[in-house]
Length: 134
Image (cartoon, rainbow, N blue to C red):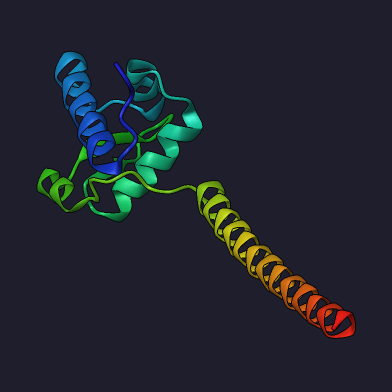
């Protein structure tokens, strides 16, 4: 099974893990516990947490040792984009490919112009030779 990459699916996964862990442990889970449960790195979990906090889906509660995660507005998940987000690398790659295609078209048009000039030149030479032969 492939891992989901869109924010909508990841948001549902994150919130469901928060709910399950809160039910199992009886207290809101920490980010580390959530990341361990779904196999995310701490960085990826932190990124997802900040995106979901910005949308008001989850919130953090300060405790003595570390922050705990709680579900704030689970309905806001439905507002998240369902398509995968393009990374900057993918955007730059598309831009590069578009530039390369433009360059190919330019080279092809220059080559076509040169071929036309060559044909015109041969036609002129042939015409001059035919006139001299007469």
